[in-house]
Image 1 (cartoon, rainbow, N blue to C red):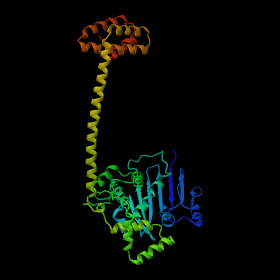
Image 2: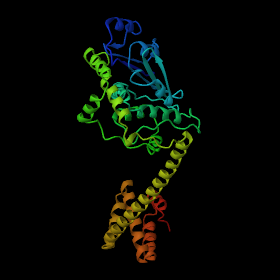
Image 3: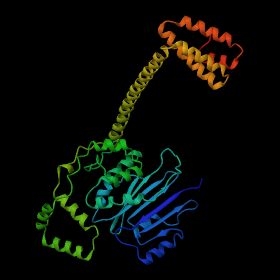
Length: 383
C-alpha cells in the first residue's frame, strides 16, 4: 500500500497574482493551482515547499493530512483582527503554536495519531472548505477555536496538570459546523470538550440588531467613522465587518462572556476520567438490562413453542421418525432439535422418565447410524 499525503492551501483575503502562481508552480508540476488555491496529493515522494513560508507569503489557510496519522491545520489572520497576545494564551505547546509574520498572526495546529495506526481510506478534499469559516469567527471575537487548540495541547499532555485554563469562551457546548469539523480533524476527545463546556456560559443570543448597531455607530468618534468609511470604499480591510462586530461586542459584554472560575488542565483530565467511568458503568448496566430482556423474550418465545408442541406430542414423535428415515445429515439435525424440544417439554411436565424410555428405544432402533448417535450425544440426548 502506497503512502498518502494531502496538501491544500487557500488564499481568502487576497487572490494569487500570475507571478505568485508561477512561483508556486516551480514547487510542483502536478499540483492544481488557481488564483485562490494550491492542492496536491503524494503517493510517492514529498512536497518540496515549506508550508510555513507559503503561509507567510501567499495563503490564509492550510490543511495537511497523511495516512500515518499526521494532521495539520494552519490559519493566517491580520493582527488587527486577532491579537497575538490573546492567541498566545491558548497556543502553548507543540500541538498548538503561533507566530507573527509581518502584519499577520499564523496559528499552527497539529494532531498525531497516538495509537500509531495507519489510515488507508483518507481523502482530504473538501475538509479545508468546511473549516475556513472559523477565520471570520475569530476576527469577530469568537475564541472557541483557540480554546479547542488549548484542549488539543492538554490532550497531548503538553500542559502541566497544575496549569490553569485560559479564559473560557461562551458557547463551547454548542459548536457550529466549522468548529465541529476542526475538533474532529484534530481528534480532540469529545469527553474533554464536554468537560470544558461545563465551565462555558451559553452562547449569546446572536447578532446585534440594526437599531443596536446604529446607536453604537452614532456614538463613535468622527475620526473612527472616517477610517471605517475609507476602508469600506477602498476595500482596504476585507475583515472590516467582523472587526467592527468584535469591537461592538467588546463594548457591549453580555452574560455569555462573563468569565468563570478557572480550572486546571489536571482537573479537566480528571473530570474526563470520572465521566468515562460513569459512562462505562451506565453502559454496563444498560447491557445487563438488555441481556435480561433478551433472555426473558427468548424464554417466553421458547415456552410458546413448547406449548404449541404439547398440543400433539405423538405427531412430533412421528415427525422425528420421518426425519431420521431420510438418512440425510440436515434432516438428522432437525430431528435432534425436535427431540431436544420434546425433552424440555417432558421435563416441564414431569414426564422425563417416559421421554428417556422412548429415547432409549429410538437409539436402539437406530444403533447402526453413528452419525445420528453422535448428534444425539452432542445435544445431551444420551442414555
